[in-house]
Length: 123
Image 1 (cartoon, rainbow, N blue to C red):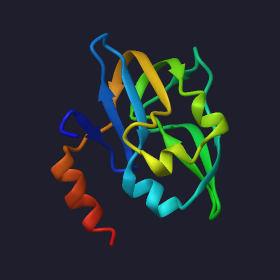
Image 2: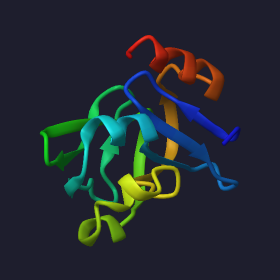
Image 3: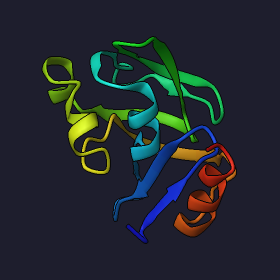
Image 4: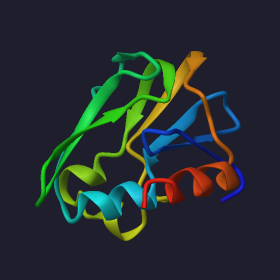
């Protein structure tokens, strides 16, 4: 997972070769949320701003906001999650939520090691 960047709000970012980035929820986030039953995906073409809400997920416990780690434009969304939001629970680092292009700003990223240390402070 060394090609991933992490945020303190528990999203991951993976840059792709075409200057875009995929965004998803970390394993820690999905564990804290519990079984996901619904995701409210952003729309392609939506402008997103780093550190602001860009979608939400509903679990058996609560509805939680998902924060964009990047400023840019949604270039695609993972429509598989509409019918199977539990994919985030099953494979959090494969079940990306959205891909962002035209990136102009980023949240403060953590490396995998920094993120692991950060979540240990939450336990």
